[in-house]
Image (tube, rainbow, N blue to C red):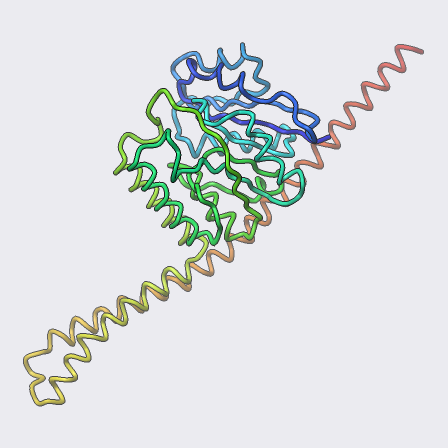
Amino acid sequence: MTKLIIQIPCLNEAKDLPKTIDALPRTIPGIDLIEILIVDDGSVDSTAQIARASGVHHIVRHRTNRGLAAAFRSGIDAALRAGADIIVNTDADGQYVGQDIVKIITPILAGEADIVVGDRGVASNVHFGFVKRRLQQLGSGIVQRLSNTQINDAVSGFRAISREAAMQINITTEFSYTTDMLIQAGRKRLAIRSIPVGTNATTRPSRLFKSIPRFILNTGITMARAYTTYNPLRAFVGTGGIIILVGMMPILRFLFFYLSGDGGGHVQSLVLGGALLILGALIAVMGILADLIAANRKLIEANLVHLRLIEDRLDLIQRTRLAEEQVNLIERRIA
């Protein structure tokens, strides 16, 4: 039996949530069971009550607002514990067309992808302003380079994830999971596809960020952090090498004047160049140490996947035992 869980991170979404839930598909070819999971990220309105009244199957609540990345993490963990074979993440504001869930899970059902990202067609989307379109195109281009993937809408929150991929993704950022997840998935060689999807006009501004400059800053920090986490040797040794090359310039300048008989007045170049060489060498050594730590992290992540598989087996055994006990109880009652 194939089980799909649609997770929706929420923050004060009592107004828009019923419409979003109503738009979700209830039957999909190839899917035997569809359930809805709400992550209430510290809402102060009646989001949880509205979700319950709308027939949501699972509700995860944060006592305080912990941010979108934490809400996504909590949703993934809860969906895995609930036995999801495929997890779809969508927004509570109804930006994404609910019926397009069929589109983004099809490659996973066919065994062609581990992760599918809904492409909103940012370059020509009439619901986005000119500045937003250009910034998202630029950001997606950078993420493509960092993650070695071909995803045109890197910050799209409308995505489907197979159970196996969800077990391997460990979101560490505190801002947004979108770019962090893609860089991780790309570096772990997971199969990622992009599928065009429709969008609806949103009735309110984003709650993820208060201004475009702040969004750019936080996204940039997230991308840099994720890239250095999975490519520390290239990031640190490359930076150290550039600093060493820059440090060689004032040293060569000093040597030129020294060989010309005028080295006495250019000792500053020698001091500056020497300091840059030492700094570059230290950063390169940091890169080697970071690469060793990254190798250890890979082992920890592999153990985490095995631990989740063991939990799955134990849960299956427990459910089997409960089913057997119920059958035995019914048989005794009949006898």
